Image (cartoon, rainbow, N blue to C red; front, side, top):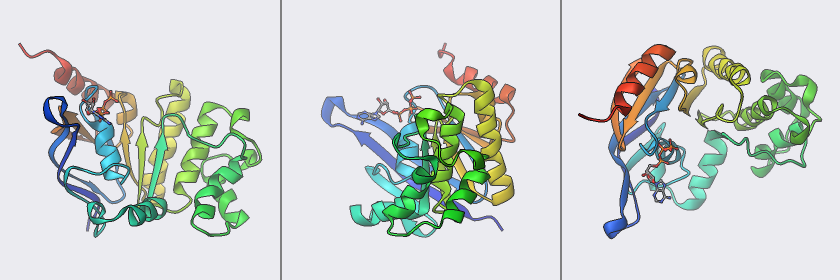
Amino acid sequence: MTRDAIRLHRVVRRFGSGDAAVTALHDLSLSFTEGTFTAVMGPSGSGKSTLLQCAAGLDRPTSGAVLLGDTDLTALDETRLTLLRRDRIGFVFQSFNLLPTLTAEQNVALPLRLSGRRPRRGEVRAALARVGLADRVRHRPPEMSGGQQQRVAIARALITRPEVLFGDEPTGALDSATGRDVLRMLRALVDDGGQTIVMVTHDPVAAAYADRVVFLADGRLHGTLDAPSAETVAARMTRMEAPAC
Ligand SMILES: Nc1ncnc2c1ncn2[C@@H]1O[C@H](COP(=O)(O)OP(=O)(O)OP(=O)(O)O)[C@@H](O)[C@H]1O
């Protein structure tokens, strides 16, 4: 039986007010099945980042509900939302966001320390081994390649065993070969570990690693594509971006 890891119900996100108001998400309902990999695509300004931020509890919808398992994120106060983000959600960014003065091992241990747990060395090393960095535990971010830094960021996001891992263009700053390595690793986390992943990307090749692509246009759902290939995704994007005649 499949279960939804996360569900958005009639989510609206409006920024500003009056004449300057922008509606980034219009009454969006969408769910992400546990143990699946979803790519979110759409033209620039279509609401992809806003969707991810609302789903991950980094931003609050103007109205609607975001359910992580049985918990409605929109009903939580700031303290509870912070705790939920720390314990149940992982996030990786295009720019890695590692602390440059800490070693890989210390960066990965940080979320555990922040939640008051003394990290076991074996646990942190195992997380780094899972992303192929068993031999880089003492290196600091400036001593690592972009791909290695993103792997550290992924190990850090996964150390708390989050229910969902969100990525906002996680391969956007990497060259294509390094990006593919990271995508293969994300795919393996889903296939071998049952991880749920939701990733925003502009790249049809990256989207083809997912089980399903969700397309957004003007803050609205514009269809989905199962078992995507780079070609089918690119064709769909070209149609979406073509000016209406
Ligand atoms: N903090 C904000 N204040 C005002 N408007 C915002 C804010 N954040 C996003 N928007 C607007 O909401 C809309 C959706 O933005 P969003 O960043 O979610 O799009 P996107 O699809 O991720 O774009 P891109 O592909 O260019 O990163 C845009 O019109 C944007 O200008």
